[in-house]
Image 1 (cartoon, helix red, strand yellow):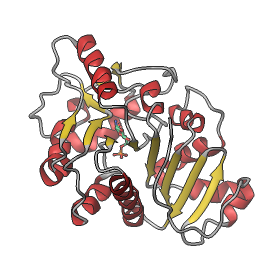
Image 2 (image 1 turned 180 degrees about the horizontal axis):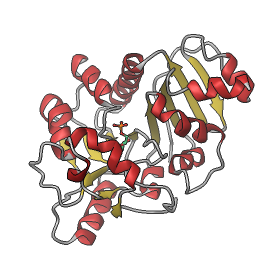
Image 3 (image 1 turned 90 degrees about the horizontal axis):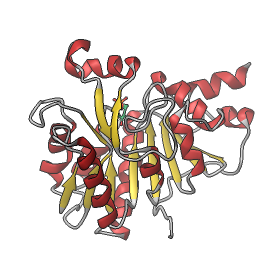
Length: 278
Ligand SMILES: N[C@@H]1[C@@H](O)[C@H](O)[C@@H](COP(=O)(O)O)O[C@@H]1O
């Protein structure tokens, strides 16, 4: 199957780089770093990351209006969704799937990922069709099978947008997850619950389980766009580039995928910079 991304972000350098040379470019504008199959662009801040990400998605839609998009929630992609709205992205022929949903949280709860998607994508951009795991399903196993089947019937995901957790999780695939995992019910790690407490106001209100696409499901996307923003993600980004490829850091699975674009802001890239100063 062909795996393509359709827009090139302007860059000042390309080529395989070691840790030293990566860091030596960190203060330039829009550095591009290739590490194996990874293509990392470092931009100034969250706003530039969001613009660059939106351009990639718009390019994907221009190339294939009926694209199947895999979408993410969390604070990181919000700017990208705003840019897509500003640019009047045409999703009228597109299908969207989401990475995950909290388990047993009512769909109408303001912090459900369904509500997030309604606010940022479904209402303003009205894709032709959308799907998201049903966290209220009475039969979770059946729901997970339904979701995987729906992705398959849609022809698979053309472009999967991802964020990353502080501990390296993607979707809700926490450290220790098999790279061949599929959509299923998972327990959230303490640090993930704590990180998401900012949306719920109280850590005790954050669900401790979720339905998530598996890492195997994610890796089947034809192309992947990972967004990384803020110093809190610097370790995850560093591990993605230089850590062992290991289930202990789920995001490192992306090194096994042939078409991954990473857009990170300077804060997220700060450990790359510091590590080169040692
Ligand atoms: N399940 C989501 C992930 O898909 C997301 O990438 C991560 C980071 O979120 P944020 O972008 O808010 O830092 O949080 C949640 O756990």
